[in-house]
Image (tube, rainbow, N blue to C red; front, side, top):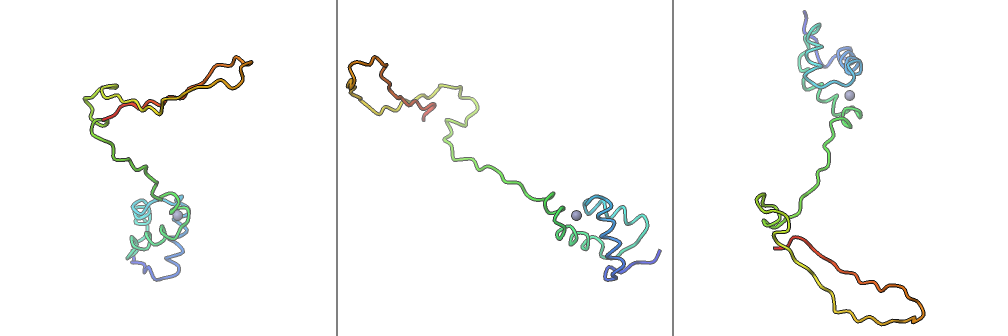
Length: 119
Ligand SMILES: [Zn+2]
């Protein structure tokens, strides 16, 4: 088995064809498949170059976004504290209600905000 040069155009076409034929496999899979029949010097670096230039491989290997957690107080993140251990209520009142239309008998509405748990 003669070593093939990676600079040869025929070798590069062989590798690119095998990359597509193997459905854009990773570097190690491609190296093992090509090593069955060929000895190519500098194969790993060329496969990485192909993978970086291939849009389908870049899309498949792209990093996903992760959600950043806010800085929560320890009272909210401690595992031994049960629910409703710390409770707080925010008031935005007092409200004075005045009846505008005396003929209507619709019920009056009041909004109350409760935040659980609090430090
Ligand atoms: Zn690819």
